[in-house]
Length: 121
Image 1: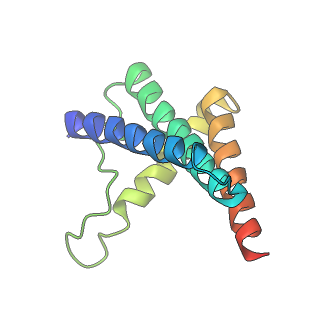
Image 2: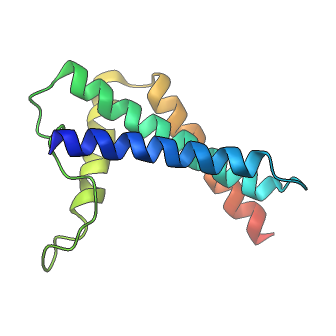
């Protein structure tokens, strides 16, 4: 499972980078789209950075091999991936407080919120 997580996270980084690049270079510039794509990219970089740091520092931890996808496996199992993401972020904040990865995550959430507010106005 760890190899699958590694490949999927690298693909997620590549996908968010491509999306952000396409949105940044479109003409005319749309601030809402730029904030949304940039926020998603920063959120992805922060979350995957937290995962790879945990993998480097504590390779035997359960969250290294945990499933981060929301695959339907039965009743009540659909949120397991989201719960693991939240556990990873909470563990990172408990161990490291505010560092580069948590700053990227917070900035990404702020940019996503700004894009949602901008699209509502």
